[in-house]
Image (tube, rainbow, N blue to C red):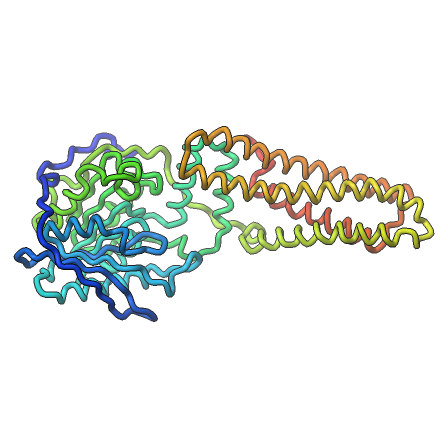
Length: 461
């Protein structure tokens, strides 16, 4: 780990001083026009004498409901900060496609609206972004100086794919998952063809000229927070921006809460004191301070999968295998119904019966492998939420997947050997028998190629 993170300076006392958050607040429900839809938000105005700083919340990934910001927005408004929390757009934002620039434009619309409200200090209206919002806020700040400041909470500052890969490996380490399981899922991520996953955050970060407050939790399992901080400081130094404050909050998770419960100690006070103290607080006595973070391993970029292992080809492989597993048994049934019509029926029946049994077993094994892989991934997702007693189940699931892959390989080799042996003994396969062999053996062969690419036959396990 970088020497700068081995022993951080304690957070300055003035940043943690108690905040009186008991003032009266006026709440409004507001809608504003945006690209292709209308945005709805809740605005909280302090009723104490102003002018007040103002802040717009920008959500992380997902549906981005304004309700998730209610505790923070209400605290800040009662402390003297006008706040806006709005619902994320539903048009132009999906699981597969998302445009961070479009989301930044939405945030800017709220900034401009808030700047025009009476009692708000136009020079002190800015943006707060968490997680995915950490890619959105810098774009907005780089686009417009209407943004007076930027607050980044658990901001990744590396590409989404690099961040997700790190988070995945962190979760798997906590689950004591074998190395092979981690490699499989990392390779699988390389086949995901979502363009936004390779977004480069650095160009926007290098254009930020406004004051920046970045807050990270020391127990965050979702981002490589040390590397995220290094990326941020590097970009701001390249921009010539010395107005940044980075604080690590003890025991804070991705939402700066303690184990999903109350906010980590000092978070709300740090935020409120920094906002109300601008522009004085924009230049701190120490840039980097707080609890010492420990990042266990370095994040790594996920290389793009080759064409034959991409998501499209993998889906095609599974579809072809499934078709083969359906066509094989159907063809086998047709053979049994029509076998008496052939002159060599007795010889064919004797040689075909064991081959047919092998094909049936191969089909069932292949289907079991597909189901077990899906179940294993679901198991990992389930235990990433509740890790109690997870590692025996994770290890057992991984051993089952590997055992089925090896069994399928053995069955493929022995089935091909049985077919070759039958042909040497004079077996004359019918058209439907050819269909059955090609369907099952071919489908299994495709799955074996995919299994080999994803490391199901590699060592260590």
